[in-house]
Structures are given as structure tokens and as C-alpha cells.
Amino acid sequence: MPSAPTQLVLALISLLSVLPVVEAVEAGDAIALLLGVVLSITGICACLGVYARKRNGQM
Image (cartoon, rainbow, N blue to C red; front, side, top):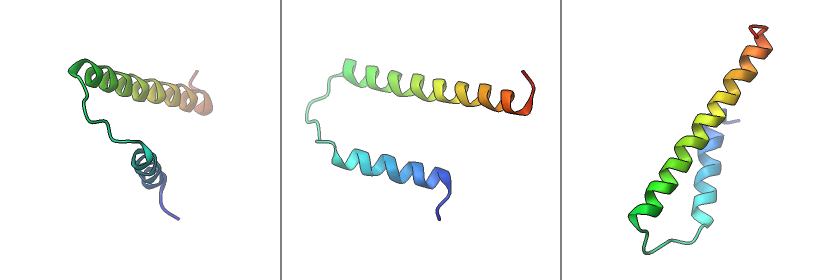
């Protein structure tokens, strides 16, 4: 069984392969997309950190 990061990468690739290709993406759309991805990843990492601290009894 592949590790968790490998499974995550495979899931993302499979989801992205289903999406239609966008021919014209404006700069504003690209910036908004990248900002959304960065904020989402930061939020997920923050939630995982809080969960880990609660689980270890540090909070």
C-alpha cells in the first residue's frame, strides 16, 4: 500500500486530469487561484497542528 503523501498526489493528479483545460486564464484569476491554494494549505496545516497538540496533551 502506498504511503499517505503518495496517495494524496495520486488523488490530486486524478482529479486534475478530469477537469477541462482552460484556454485563457487571466492574471487575476491565476493570482486568486494561487492565493486560495496557499491559504487552504496553510489552514489545513494549522488545523493539523492544533489536532496534534491536543492529542499529545500540550493544550
